[in-house]
Image (cartoon, rainbow, N blue to C red):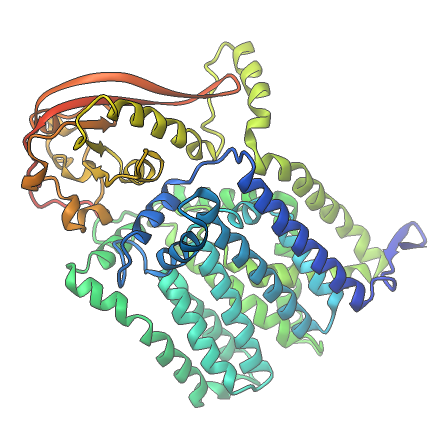
Length: 546
């Protein structure tokens, strides 16, 4: 309820006791988890993403590490599939469970820092209004375990630094190390803590204590399997990460990417919530030098969140930033935003300036939530508008369109394989297509990736067709120069095959295309070719695209 004060209204939340906050949290977690599981198991419109399919394929061959990532995601998926079978819901179930864990840590940290179940519940509710986070809680990529470990490490850091718990330094090191096995960026959590220890006078002396160094030492132990694997495979992960993050020698400075980075983040969290987050940071920084009993807690959250956000933003000058890369920064910033809004609610005049931004955030989240679960619901409207404008309807605006049609393509390829000899192979231009076909083609066969075997971009006739390398280039039994592949038939999925691929077969002819359409919009068309008498391929000259 709210109480009138002049022309403004200020919220009074006495009815929202600590017990009721926890009951609401329990209901939110239970209903959210059950609704997500129901969504995944009852005609889910989204097939596995290319990354999910790739990690599932990794899980069929557990190892110390993999080409582009650590081993954690593969082991998690294999554990889930060992219980529930190799199905789409089984692949994604760990993401739902990890999201529950992250929610509990969010609530626990907010309550610990500010002694308020209302602030803690507010932080959880803010997170549930962000479509990007809702989608991330159902897709089993490296992000759910990475985000959970990031949250857990932050909670342990608060216990270690603010509460003086010695055991928390050890737990923090374990959380960082496990997070590293999911995503190498986990070590970028550390600069935020170091920054806080430097700017917080009461915590500065801890830099000279054993705690932080014990944490780092423990975290470094978890790098051993990744280092061993890379030493055995020519340090391909290091080369790949350098290429992806813009730290390789051929990276170029750009002013366009930072603008896209800022725009993508505003779109991801919503413009209203973006304003609240900025307001919360400005408020927290403004209270640093004042006699505020919560200034250290706010300083901690700003340092842990904003430092990583600035690091990613700086990297955008040299590489294109994916919209999900800065997501961990929001873990602490959302808690800060919940506390900030709580302080505004206590003053009628201040609350009047911010209530519109909060209601806008709620409206944006409520409006986008159904669409985030199934963007197909707006396809008919897009199709009608496009045709009225005499344009071809397209789904390129939909970030989930690439998650549709893989099962359909797998069925199409399965039908073609039945017409061929039993040893026919599936060959794909893109490594993610190879992973998808490994999952969706009948019998879940071993599939092959051809894109990295094409001639390098410097060759004019290649038309920049050479793709980057992947885990398929590491596995010995996926090499295209193997003698046991000679003479086989192959279904190739990709654009018009380049000359070097055509030359690798005695004959190659087109097959019927597989068109993926949804509610009046053609999402994409998969071209397919039949190759007979495979003669093998030769690795292109050394100009490797990592």
